[in-house]
Image 1 (cartoon, helix red, strand yellow):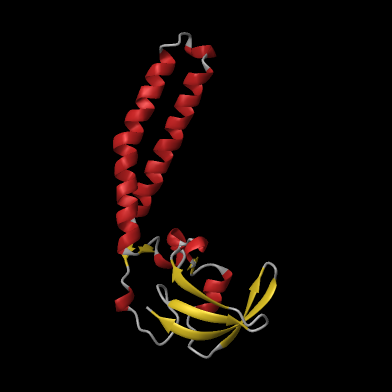
Image 2 (tube, helix red, strand yellow; image 1 turned 120 degrees about the vertical axis):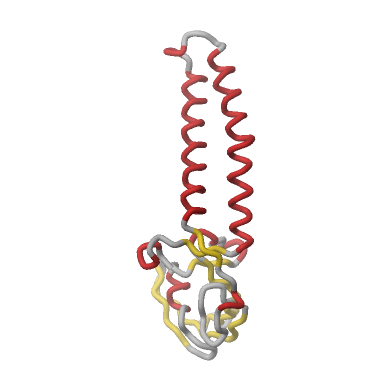
Length: 162
């Protein structure tokens, strides 16, 4: 689900949308106030032309504003996607997929999400990742080969759920 294929639309779960809205609120309310205080404090130390603390505070302010702008841009293009709206016969975004590595016989369960929600530590992988791309559209029982930077992985899809 890349932006170019979806006219810039970013698909998010309701949960992730709420997280982003909360983060934006905190950055605007508390982040900006904190930054203004740091800049004011640095200004009070004298000559701005040789004030490294002031330069650092201004740079941090720029990073904060870029982060705010990025979140606002993401939110302006967001569409909520609900797993119950999608069929369960194949792997789609928001599918939870249990797969078995055909070499090691180990099983792992992944949830396929948008790139903005991917979190490997929580077994949430992007639909645009090599494994995500390899799983999309497949059915239970399918055996697939996926090219990854380390080589070719072979899996069997054991279960698809929401």
